Length: 284
Image (tube, rainbow, N blue to C red):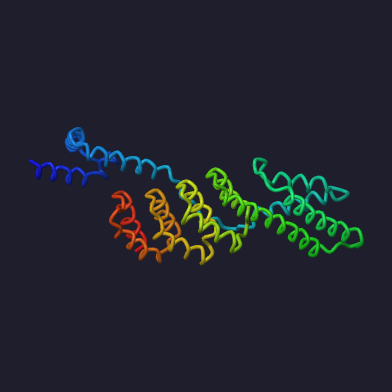
């Protein structure tokens, strides 16, 4: 009788994926439901797998972002149009734009703002002085000055993001990762901090958002290599599934070896195993 029950459990688990997808015939569905009603062990396993399955459907697969400087040049074009229409340089408008670019809910040290805005004032003074002292402004030089000013703002944003990633609050770390959408070109410090978060953060949601953020920079070979290496470090089924999706989206064939190694883990979730096997087929 015990052997019959074991056979029934194995048969039931073999139909798990079809059961979750509602692809079973009615008789087979009823047979599994009857077994689940009698077997507490299968009930618990099916409930856990269904939770992961439902979560997989909610994962947003990030698209690699191109033209990372587009937002900045859009702002620059708008600024040039304003210059044509205005008779003088609008200091107040520029300061309000910079102030609004920093989320209001973030608290940063007063000295950080003082130093940052001091740099901006110096930059603006340089721009105004150049325009005042030259009867025929050099457009190329003026654009370089604006780009230098924007680079200073980008550096301030990067510094704030790095600081918030060390916050003990998962909510604050989520905000920090989300701030990468405003960092057009991530330097080595930012990328290293993001990979540290992806590989070590105790919160699964923070890791998922970090994965999406890193995918924005997947045009860089070092980022793609880091994502492949990260596969072996993930223990959450949700993150493992999300990373498999990213590998397919990026068509990162170098990940096949790492995915095969992941399949050898004894405690690998059954649904994750099915997902990874399909991912390997898609990349092969």
